[in-house]
Image 1 (cartoon, rainbow, N blue to C red):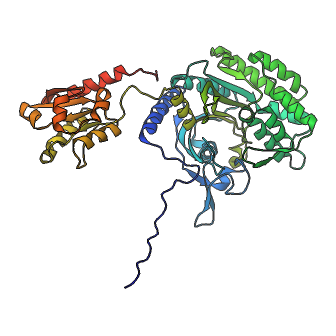
Image 2 (cartoon, rainbow, N blue to C red):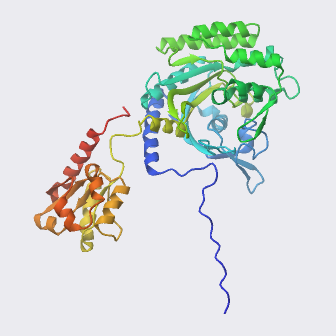
Image 3 (cartoon, helix red, strand yellow):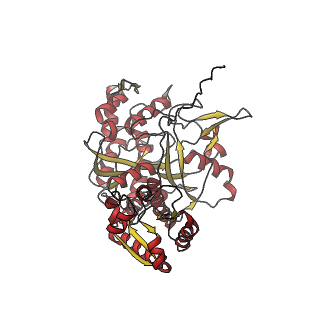
Length: 505
């Protein structure tokens, strides 16, 4: 007799750096995105969607790590021998779209977009290889009024989703100021490997909030070994160069005016620096006219953004409230989005400069922030009303109830399993049903249905063993005439919503 060959089955496992997202989080995210979209559209932005992957050369040399097609991004070669890459942000695809459709677009062109982006980087706690962003960009104007507007948009968006003033700050800087400091320090990019050194400096400063000043100084100098033992090569600057950069990032003041005065002392010898200062002064006037003080939008020289394509004002939205890390230690929540001016991206395609500026929100991180603040509840139970099956010979009657509820705009389902009362109640609990509908023999004789409110009766429902105990106990339930089913369920759900604090408003 032939020996049976062993069946090799694939292991059910999730790729590193990716995550499964369940319905409750998806619904909370959808509600948040709807509010963000409302604010963006109020400002006149129009929606756009671009593909998840692009030709790799369209993404350019702005990848997070290096030039190799599959370093920093996920890439593959198509049948024509051309490299394609999953988008690592929503900005590079926008630049391609604008260049491809430039003559037909209104100028300025204002668009918003949400979608997943992908980073081929080392995953870690809270650091995923796929995550969602929500962007707004204005393309076709050099006016810093567009940059100031995005800072206003960021502040208004945070308020719209329930983040109170005082719990967030939008920080603003200008890449021209940093360019001036590097120029004065002898790092203008003209020397061999100058651009690479400049990018290393940018990424070092960008880690200030997360790693602290001492770690950044190591990254500006010889390099740094992290807690896992991995070594990150530094920019190898000398002591004087490091001191000049540190003095720059620490030049922030209590007001925007005070910060401008401090920065003027450091960069006024540079023409580029003076341009950056003038742009920030104009933004200050616009922000003040909009009623936004330094408690909502501040000038902060430590904000540089890690990508190399920014050319002018850069900004970052940060949440300032405290939460706890995985070890229970108090930490500030930190950045949930940022952006800036990138006047060179579209020029890669067209050969002429097309000014642009944009802001990107990290949706997953912002969702986590709302959860930490207990602001994800929308005031309603997310699950469907469940019609229990008490008599399998009456499936059509139960299905008719579910359909009536759906027709009235109420989420509903008939139990499709084959289990008894106790299992059906457990199922309803796992589905977060606001209530269940019961029509047994007694209800049918009286022309009624029984409605059990699960927000009040969940604990007791877990203890129910059989139909007799249900009839005798009847926790948190009431009966109504069969033809009043939809009205009664609608009123119950409305009452449940009224009883839950509206934290998201």
